[in-house]
Image (cartoon, rainbow, N blue to C red; front, side):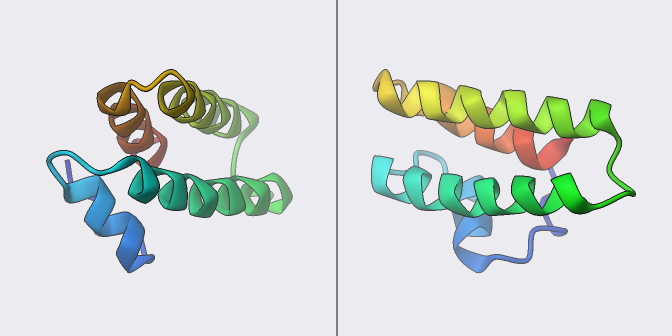
Length: 82
Protein backbone atom coordinates (compact mmCIF):
# COMPACT_ATOMS: atom_id res chain seq x y z
CA UNK A 1 0.00 0.00 0.00
CA UNK A 2 1.07 3.54 -0.67
CA UNK A 3 0.78 5.92 2.27
CA UNK A 4 2.52 8.92 0.71
CA UNK A 5 -0.51 11.07 1.57
CA UNK A 6 0.21 10.67 5.32
CA UNK A 7 2.05 13.81 6.39
CA UNK A 8 3.05 12.76 9.90
CA UNK A 9 6.52 11.19 9.66
CA UNK A 10 6.11 9.02 12.76
CA UNK A 11 2.81 7.60 11.55
CA UNK A 12 4.28 7.00 8.12
CA UNK A 13 7.16 5.00 9.65
CA UNK A 14 4.67 2.95 11.70
CA UNK A 15 2.54 2.24 8.63
CA UNK A 16 5.58 1.06 6.69
CA UNK A 17 7.07 -0.94 9.58
CA UNK A 18 6.98 -4.70 9.54
CA UNK A 19 6.16 -5.03 13.27
CA UNK A 20 5.63 -1.74 15.13
CA UNK A 21 5.76 -1.72 18.92
CA UNK A 22 2.75 -1.07 21.13
CA UNK A 23 4.13 2.39 21.97
CA UNK A 24 4.53 3.24 18.28
CA UNK A 25 1.00 2.08 17.54
CA UNK A 26 -0.40 4.11 20.44
CA UNK A 27 1.33 7.26 19.20
CA UNK A 28 0.04 6.66 15.67
CA UNK A 29 -3.43 6.00 17.10
CA UNK A 30 -3.38 9.39 18.81
CA UNK A 31 -2.55 11.16 15.54
CA UNK A 32 -5.21 9.17 13.67
CA UNK A 33 -7.76 10.18 16.30
CA UNK A 34 -6.88 13.83 15.79
CA UNK A 35 -7.32 13.39 12.05
CA UNK A 36 -10.69 11.69 12.52
CA UNK A 37 -11.84 14.59 14.69
CA UNK A 38 -10.77 17.03 11.99
CA UNK A 39 -12.61 14.95 9.39
CA UNK A 40 -15.81 15.43 11.36
CA UNK A 41 -15.67 19.15 10.54
CA UNK A 42 -14.66 18.64 6.90
CA UNK A 43 -17.63 18.86 4.55
CA UNK A 44 -15.65 17.03 1.85
CA UNK A 45 -15.50 13.84 3.95
CA UNK A 46 -18.63 11.75 3.46
CA UNK A 47 -20.36 10.07 6.38
CA UNK A 48 -19.52 6.69 4.82
CA UNK A 49 -15.81 7.50 4.77
CA UNK A 50 -15.93 8.92 8.30
CA UNK A 51 -17.73 5.81 9.58
CA UNK A 52 -15.24 3.47 7.89
CA UNK A 53 -12.33 5.39 9.40
CA UNK A 54 -13.99 5.45 12.84
CA UNK A 55 -14.53 1.68 12.67
CA UNK A 56 -10.90 1.12 11.69
CA UNK A 57 -9.78 3.33 14.56
CA UNK A 58 -11.90 1.30 16.99
CA UNK A 59 -10.25 -1.84 15.61
CA UNK A 60 -6.80 -0.34 16.25
CA UNK A 61 -7.72 0.34 19.86
CA UNK A 62 -9.22 -3.11 20.35
CA UNK A 63 -6.12 -4.73 18.88
CA UNK A 64 -3.84 -2.78 21.19
CA UNK A 65 -5.99 -3.44 24.25
CA UNK A 66 -6.23 -7.12 23.37
CA UNK A 67 -2.50 -7.43 22.81
CA UNK A 68 -2.91 -8.23 19.11
CA UNK A 69 -0.46 -5.76 17.62
CA UNK A 70 -0.65 -7.40 14.20
CA UNK A 71 -4.40 -6.75 14.05
CA UNK A 72 -3.89 -3.22 15.41
CA UNK A 73 -1.30 -2.53 12.71
CA UNK A 74 -3.59 -3.89 9.98
CA UNK A 75 -6.46 -1.72 11.25
CA UNK A 76 -4.23 1.36 11.30
CA UNK A 77 -3.24 0.67 7.71
CA UNK A 78 -6.94 0.29 6.87
CA UNK A 79 -7.69 3.65 8.53
CA UNK A 80 -5.18 5.39 6.27
CA UNK A 81 -6.41 3.50 3.19
CA UNK A 82 -10.02 4.73 3.44
